[in-house]
Length: 208
Ligand code: 3PG
Image 1 (cartoon, rainbow, N blue to C red):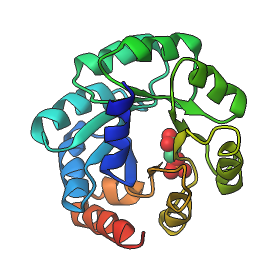
Image 2: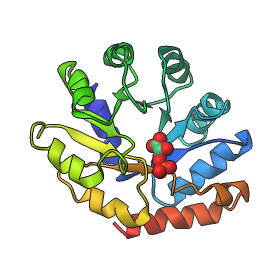
Image 3: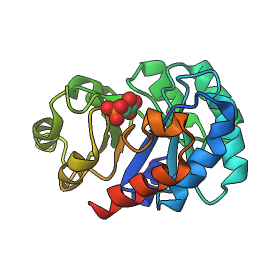
């Protein structure tokens, strides 16, 4: 389980948090990101199109890592597994989801905002966490502080991170990747301006 989570986090320093409003957008949007150099894609369940989008993108872009985000229940976890998701990200933790994630073939990156939540996951064997919502939950100083008692834990912070702050997070020894929606601005997606998405991805990687 851990090796598979690590493989995802090691594959891209930037993880786009994708919301699919128009089901026809999923594949071209993800292709634009891959074209820009990003090969880990978090497709959220924030709209009803999320599960189908995961299935379509998995088939269309086999070279990318395609995962599910905003998974909040075991029922959703099972749905995205069936759709072919290669990883699952939750915004927070419940013991039920943490326990399910250990036994699932599809590895879980659980979201935490506090040390107490981290400890629940840690005691079940998790060493990789999403830190969410990163900016309001303490940002870089919090991650530095977490490294004191838990030097063996690695984070993927998301929430409030932007192109001009991503590098500062990635400079921390306990941050392997950062996530965010800045890579898929709603106006560019609504305009189906895929070349702009590719440029943002490429530019954001170049800025690191
Ligand atoms: C997430 O779920 O990771 C966040 O919604 C991303 O936050 P952002 O919109 O501030 O990048």
